[in-house]
Amino acid sequence: MATKTKSRWFVGVPHEGLKECALYAFPHAGAGVTTVRQLCVELSDTFDAFAVRLPGRESRLGDPVETVMPELADKLAAELLHHAEGRPVVLYGHCAGSTIAFEVARRLGPARVRALVVSSHPAPGSVRREPTWELPRADFLQQVVKDGYLPSQLLANEELLDIVEPALRADYELLETYELELYEGGGTEPVPVPTVAVHGHDDHTVDPTQVGAWSALTTGPFRFVSLPGDHDLPSSRPADLAAAIREALAAVA
Image (cartoon, rainbow, N blue to C red; front, side, top):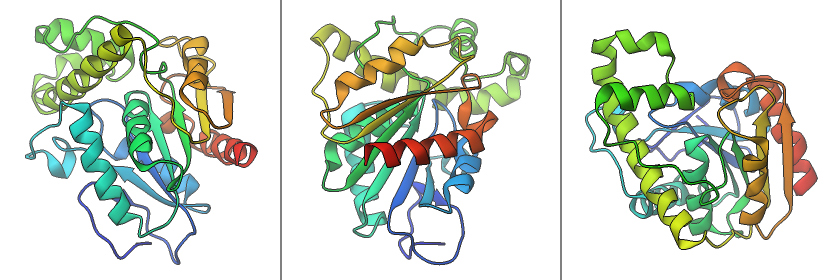
């Protein structure tokens, strides 16, 4: 492993040596590290790459879930500062993970964050969506499928749904309450770090203009990247996404 510091929040890609910069990848709602692991592998030649594991999933299935954004972002920022061992970091978030990465970037600031990269998610506060996290199971999970977080064929697997639903509901509560507050409050202050926003050509869950609206949430350089692929870029196009991230970071550096 490329750091001597261990944390239950982060899972790295083993390799030799210590890179100058560390990258932390935040997966989509309800997901664990497996959904961003291949992207971390693709980026491990450039960064010490780590997937973020939130409570309530995978090896942390028994840990209490997080549903309040400021509390979660505070914990992640503190953990990440310790884990990165003083190095600059790049924060990457996919879909709902983009908003969590944004709030962590706000707390760490430009002294620590070299860049923020987001994919497949509207800029926080730019779109209103009614809360769905309290809906009955069938209605809630249909929304999850619509949002691209869960394959529709899994809806018949009650045993699996019993495992994944609590983390999904927690993440929806976390994001929906936070983003609705921003929308009704007129938005949020931008972060002073370079930002890259990525959209897949065939992603029908979010409009490219909504992804491009991240430009209003940074006072640093901004770059919008459009890639072949659908909503789930880290899993379906990890090599293409990794190449785009490297190129875009070089451009905004």
